[in-house]
Length: 200
Image (tube, rainbow, N blue to C red):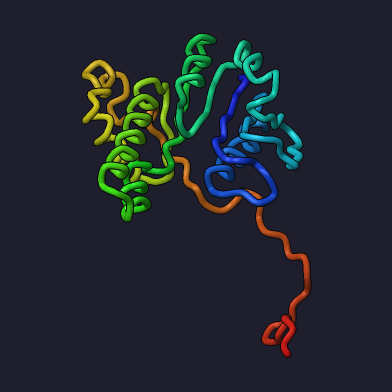
């Protein structure tokens, strides 16, 4: 059993964006066989059953790195990278969002120099994250092809690296982002063909 630290850059709570849902679901699944600590910004009202949920401001945040084995995060900051490297954790990057492509569209209306700065910053962070990664996850085969090209462009796939894992399946794996593994539960009886909402 390994100790896995999962870092969410988004708040974990009752209402969550995709960037928080995915770490939450990872924590639920991995906690079935491993010790898991999920970190997120701020305090959370969520109450997980099989894993710990802590704020990054918790005094125990850095202490957990001292006896952990793996860090799973969507992106690395310099302090986060330093903690992981200092304590010899394996780093897994969850690259389910192609950030530079997303920001090209998101900041389309911005001043050109501002837009270029944001894309440069995002791409630089991605390069740092991928170069330090012991493994990378993505959400689809199409994303996987994108990241293989990116890895080649950054000269991360060396001949020695390729010879050890020629199809890159061990280093770059697909974990789809879809419906929760728990099937939906029917809570009310509905009569087919009848209106169930109020009308005036």
